[in-house]
Amino acid sequence: MNEKLHIIPHLHQVNRQLRNSMKGHRSMVIWFTGFSGSGKSTLSNKLEGYLYNQGYHTSTLDGDNVRKGLNSDLDFSDEARKENIRRIGEVTQLMADAGLVVLSAFVSPFKEDREQVKSIVGSDSFIEVFVDCPIEVCEQRDVKGLYKKARNGEISNFTGISSPFEAPEQPDVHIYSDRETLEESLHKLISYIEPKLKLNNE
Image (tube, rainbow, N blue to C red; front, top):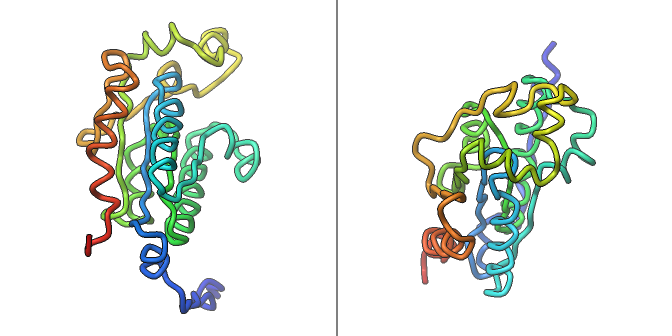
């Protein structure tokens, strides 16, 4: 017997549209993908600061933070990584439904997984940001010392070293963090994202 047949989602009186109207802007998921050390979290943090100061209701999800809590039971095998992103996709959907602009910064190396999140959230509420930086530059930065550990065999299945990264072919916003200043990248993001946060009647 398929017990999932007995799961019937409840339709709530207060929906996403009403919450968006109350907050004065559309809710959205802004998904940052790229190598470790590419600058995803730095850029996401900078963008959230701007959006917050403009009066948008925001929240951030970041790889290490989620791994410490919600997904602390998952390792870094390919299957666990897929489950990691699937869970995050479901959480971002709930947060967007609550009326928030959700900034999600995850390596998320597999195209299929990013497409799954887009499907969960809805294509009209999902913005994919590819923070593009050559692996050599990320390794030189090695902000967390992870590349050195991966090279020494202390970390297995490390993206760019012992595990592949499937770069987005047509991201909504393409950031070149090795060639652009942080302010240039931020301006590019704001120019694309902010108009999409406006309600249709504005």
